[in-house]
Image (cartoon, rainbow over all chains, first blue to last red; front, side):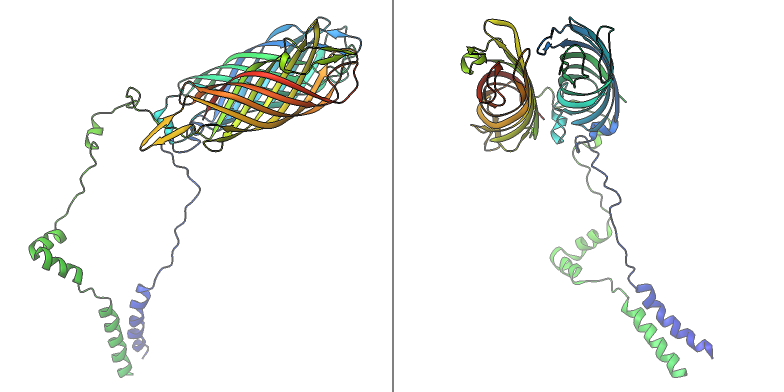
Length: 215
Length: 256
């Protein structure tokens, strides 16, 4: 007798097979348009990391308090960077600078570390395909710390001092991987409290010549 | 129960028939009338392939690189931001004198650097944040110096539209005068005994001329006026007061 139910079940089959199967299509992730020049991370995506190094010429500025005056001299040093291209027009870098400062009364050296935020003047829209850009000017600013030592005649109260910087320069890009870098940095070191001269914040105009390699 | 089974089979047949496709619709019928049965049938039965876009087949064999580089075509590149950097000199004759005790001394041999990051807000208006470092000298006192560092913001108004639309052609003006209004805040120091110093606020006005060298890179020649409100300007003087300073600036601006 239960076989009689079979036709009923067969009757239900067409309804079941024709039943609408609800589905939903959704975009998984936010995949940017990867066509040439189609987004602001086109180059940054290919070469996210870069390293670089440069020669540093520093022109240390004079300083004076009520009783003592010091005259700044020029010094040479080096520095290195490792950075990330966040966008094609913006990068963050860790910057090590072997500080060598010199005045007529004393010398100071130190290990200075900056985190620099840099804006590259690079065409980052669709029109970059029509524009071959070799010169890429940039501006930026940095903040960091410096571990300082001075020579025997002078002492400092703070071995570690905050430092700030304003940067500008031109990158000459020779292909996607390699760039020459000609830069300027205004270096400002908060006073380490010298015993010789009061309230003296060492500052310098620094000129940098170096290179960067993207990978 | 037998009747129920028959009814069930009847429903099943109804459902099956309901899903059947007649394979003929009024659209086809209209086409047959308008175009003829043979043409309409051919459209329905013959497989057709879309033509390849012009030049597509040749792409397998030939590849053109840097096609635009040697042509005379100029492309309008819309830019949103710019960077600016350069230097300037202090105009002693256009600045208030500094005080050394009861003496007033003219500024001489001062110079400054400027680094800026700007946004092109429209064809006429742009805004910018900048960093400036000043070094001031004083006439008759070669060893006396004063320095200042400041961060400022300026709103610029270009007196002429950068890009001019003439029908389908976009022209770029080479020379565009501009003015700017803004303010800076920073620190300054007159080095040596009893020199004034501390923080200052300086409303500023800028009047200049922009000369474009390429579609993206230009030179700004400008006069900057600053009204420095601080703790005095000199040595052995009474704190307070307002100092007017004038600078002539030459900076490079790169749009991107």
